[in-house]
Length: 227
Image (tube, rainbow, N blue to C red; front, side):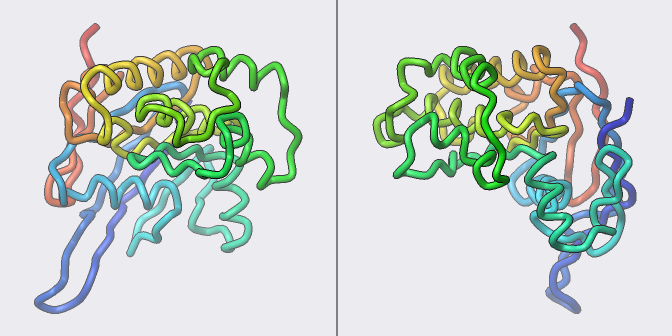
C-alpha cells in the first residue's frame, strides 16, 4: 500500500543569474511500513525535499500525497493540523524543550493537540528507548544519544503515518549513531512505521529497505537493499 507519493516536485530559489533549482521534477513513492533513506552531499537538495514533504516549506510546483491526500491543496490551518497529527519529525539538533523532562518532551505533541496520553503506549515507548530510568531527567542531564532517543519517541507518540528524520545521527559519535539507526529500524518493524530518512552517510543509509540519491536536485532510485 502506497503511503507517500511525490509527483514532479520542483523548488526554485531566486531568479535570473541567482536562480537555483534545488529540486528538479522529483517523483517517487514510499510504501506503508517502508524505511527509505535519501542520500546526497550537502547542498544536493535532500533537506529541501524533506521539508517539502513535511510541509515545512512550499514547493514551486508539483504535488505531495500522504495517504492519498494532496497536502498542498489544503488550507493553511487544515494543513497545520494534518501535519501535527500525521507526520513525526526527528531533527539533527534534537530540538527538545530544555525546561521539560524526558516524559514531558515525549508527550508534548499530544498536549499541543489537546489529546490525552495513552499510559501503556508511553511506557512501551520509554522501555524501547531505554529511558525508563531517565523519565524525570532534563535534556541537559542526558547524553546526545539519549536526547536523540527522546526525539525519536516524541516523533512516534502521536502514531504518525510518516516519520521524517533529518540527519538523525549528524551530531552523534559512531556508537550512538549505530544505536539510533538500529532503534529507528526496530520502530519501523514493530509499529509498521513508514520512515523517510535523509543522510550523507552511506553506512547509515545501508540499513534502510531502499536508498534514493539526490544530486543537484535530481533524484535517482538506487534500489532495494539486499538482505
